[in-house]
Image (cartoon, rainbow, N blue to C red; front, side, top):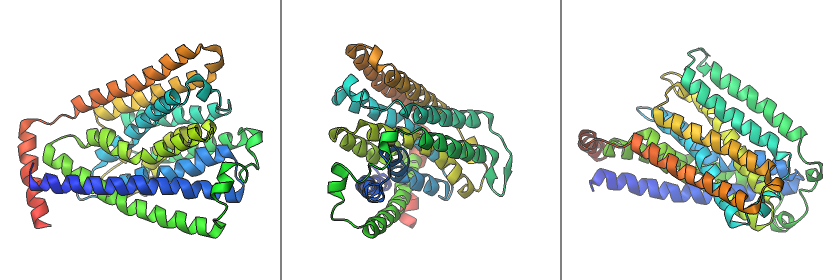
Length: 358
């Protein structure tokens, strides 16, 4: 292993550990804020916790497009890969915590959020394929459309939320956890941890960019397979915690809400990319990951809506199929991004000299 690759991997592992830890802290303080302010469970899962646990993706994507040279393929790969991983997390958590029984705890109103996640992911794939060149003040038309759909969609999700969620934020286990915490302290800690995520996200993007240069592995592949696994660890941790509390609704809302917000990250990061329109910098691996993510989102909706009419073994089989499709997609993405020998040798030489000069 070359010295440059060893340094890049060390930075990646260190920043990954920091991102995972801080992401868990974001979920903790975000949940405390929700409890102390009295917001409902669906709002907590689909907006506050989803946004908080998606900060690693946001930080990494902005850092990726601000690298010199920029790495938009890494940014797109992280978004599409994160949505794939979220659905893999859904399948594995549901399987581990009872399959059909777990899904039966999910409110039917979550269907609106799941449809929004499918629409947003589908639009992301469509804009990546069409490659619209219209923009104003470094903001593309595709980014504006995504933002408008997000705002309108989340308005519908909020209006259609379960009525029993309203005003129950100060009750239950969450209230016990936040009993010793004031609202001011929760906001301060949430802000400080968020800043830490932004800093760690920069080093994560930088290290992956160096690994891509040294090994010749496509940045899109590393974003889909490596970075997305790290940046979605907070979502996985929050969902597992919700499942252990018997709050499947909160966990499902977090995962699908994160899928929605991940696509919005493309709009937020777009103005930071100065060499064109971010979503237009797509590669075949992005379409594979996006297509699988969209299918898994809709398949999850089918299982949730049809859970009461399906035998529990059929539900288990469906969840197992979701997990298997993610793994199959990961293999395809890895194959598409495999390096050739020439790129490996050239990249290793260039990156080693870069580390020595820095």
